[in-house]
Image (cartoon, rainbow, N blue to C red; front, side, top):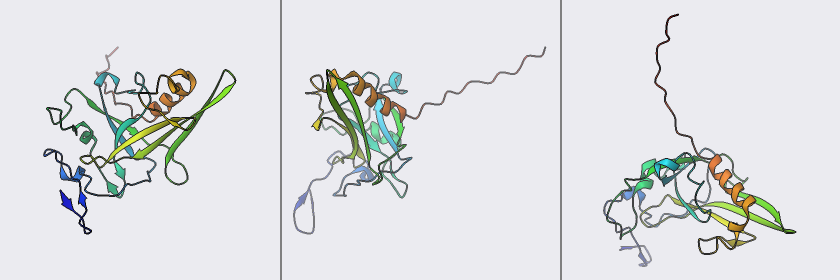
Length: 194
């Protein structure tokens, strides 16, 4: 444990293979984001072009790259396991999917609202990106989702936003629009003479 100036115990990362630069170490939240800032998530290679297509949109973990004046992590840092009970250091069966923030609110926050009418009732879904540091992963951030002010979790997903296909689709499309597509390189072949 570390001790602060007022002798309160400050928890520290206890996973030895996590680089010190990724430890929380009492660093404050960074509430603002930047247009162009990258977010990294791990996913199966076959879903790297759109990792949101087949998942439930509840709370989604990512690592933020950080502001241009304060870079927080490298893309492959998201592959580190920060769970004490996992018997490996990095996820070998996953790859990094990169997202890019394209727009923000006037106060440099990422928050979007979507609506749907169903059976005469109007539903409002919101998604917000929040810096949510973990002890061993300071750049950890989450997309948090609400429906009519209720936070969406895996426990309440099917009873809430899971029944609203329009909002669910809008949320997935919004996230997918931020994905940086992988580059496909074609091998050039010489032109045949005619």
